[in-house]
Image (cartoon, rainbow, N blue to C red):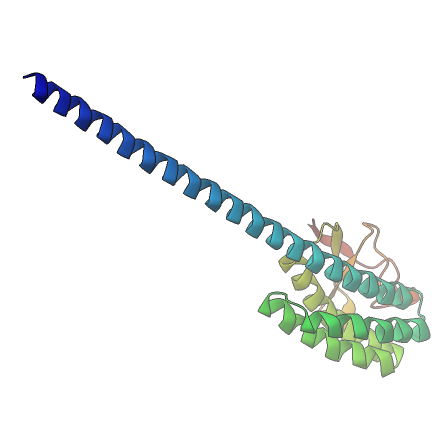
Length: 189
C-alpha cells in the first residue's frame, strides 16, 4: 500500500504540473492576443484619425464654397473649388472605405464644374454636391457639428439642401436674393 500511495501522489503531482503548464501556456497566449489586439486597435484608430483629418479638410473647403455663394462671390467660389480639387483627388486615392471613395469621385466632378461655371451653375452643382457631402460626413469619423439646412423654394419649389457650421440660415442657393430662406432639418454630430 505504501507504494500505491506514492504512485497516487506522483500522479497528483504530475496532473497538477500538467494543469499548471496548460494554464501558463494559455495565459501567455492570452497576453499575446491582448498585445496583438491592442496593436490592431491602435492602427485602426490611427487610420480613422487620418481619414478624419482628411475629411475635415474637405469640409473646410466645402464650407468655403458655401460662404462664397452666400456672398454672391462667383470668383471666390471658383477659387475655393479649384483648391479643394487637389484635396479631394488625394481622398480618392486614400485608404478609406469604398463608398467614401465613390462619393469623393462624384464630388470631384462637381468641383470641376463649380471651378469653371457661372454662379447660377455653381449653385445648382453645389446643391447636388451637398447631398454627397452629407453622406461623407455621416460615413466618416469626423467630430464636426454641422447643420443640414433646407430651402423649400429652391429649384421651382422642389427644395435644396446644404451643410453649414452655423445654425443660423444663410442661403447659398439664392445668396442675397433670399439670404434667410430656409430651415435647419438635421444636426449632424
